[in-house]
Image (cartoon, rainbow, N blue to C red; front, side):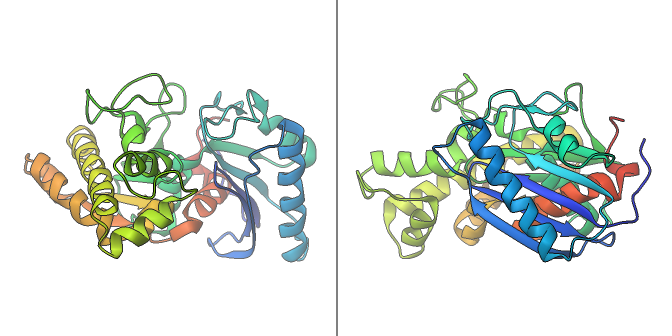
Length: 316
């Protein structure tokens, strides 16, 4: 159990799409923010230099305050809490000693690293859609699909720091292969690049360099294949959340990440599948909502690992 820190915190969010950082006040307000696309073609040291540049900029923008610590959400897998990271969607980092490097850069400060989706769960419980609720699932649906669990008001880490990783719940045993080596995982079906690939196989913009944003835009315009892809993702999410709710007795599931911005295109089929499969009385009480903190959820949650460590950090 750690002591909360009453000072601004440097928060970092590392994913396959972006490298972002903010300086966050003890009350949860970000006073400075920087973001760059995650470079696809750099080696480990090139990625580290890119991240370091973002960190220098955001601290300078905030007026170089005295920091109380560093909180990080990073795509997995990773060793935890040592945080040697090997994000599936950042091939340049394999067993990269992220926590050790940050400790060297910010000597004397607590450095706490957790999965990026865990940080979304923490952020939404602390200052977002799950505030005031005890039992919250936070999710990221973007380049990958991940999750984190707060139960009875405290973050649940699990044996290896991976509790709540809903992206690898199997929703279709006959479904597509997943990067984890399994088949039919939620991530294999609902991750943005997977959806795009599926839609292109079905005849939507074949061979074009398109993204999940393009897919959602065309679905909104009524393109049948694009709309079917969004329904496919929503259905898979609904099935997975129904299973998680039966297991964990959830009150709120808050969904962040780029694909969550598709709105009703995603949430309507999600709700339909959830209500079809969540049949026990207690499971029907769960509320599924977009992350109230939007794209800042992970950063606010990363900061809370330090600011509110008594609830959200159990490792040292």
